[in-house]
Length: 298
Image (cartoon, rainbow, N blue to C red; front, side, top):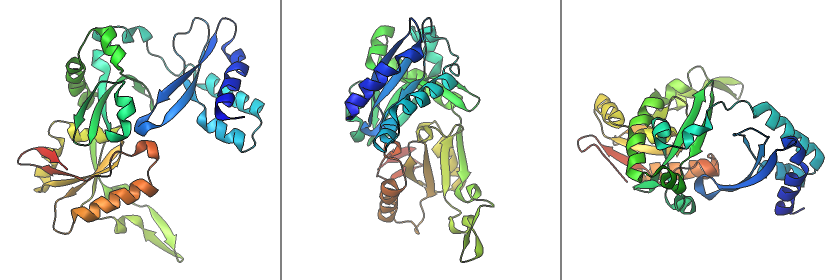
């Protein structure tokens, strides 16, 4: 079957999972960097929330020869394992006053998300866009989030500035920033090379640092937190280079003569090409932070 036929077949033949009075729908969504996906939403009777099960990986299994009935059983198992993991009250999404304390922001690439940005409120910063989402549940190592769309603002009868103001306050409070030495991340981490144990931290410059948030999800947004870059630059006594490792983290380097910006740009682009998932790439550019002006530039 072609992909569209596969999706329709799954929808029709997995309907039993929803049970009597339930329903199954396909939710077509645009993810980061233009990736479009179809999510299967299984809604049992009298339930208001359900996990979304994306079908692209299952189609890959199908074209590699997996039996489609086994695929449906896997989908059923995933659904039953996760249907009770989301425990928030969906009614809080109906009014701005009940959701405003859970609104946070993340940053994505502007050009790579033009189609998505037509549908969501956003603020452009350099080659990036600040977009907003609701952090509905964030405990036990699991989180439930909901991206904020233009129609949400219409239903809430608020402006993008109202959402932006709430996110500016909430994001640093709910998603605390963390800066770690890159070498510390590889502490006591070794590999065997030609029969000899090699400590990886010996190959990581001591003046490379990772900035993210405590969840390590969408942590690149920490570059916009008040005073995070300023305080760190003051501590080092240097301006900074900011290397966008992914949407989840950035690498901070003091601006020293040993670092050439062109070489850093080449490194970021090489890593993005070979080592970062396409939907997690933030940018191919390297940014500079001036601690006197408290300003990020390209």
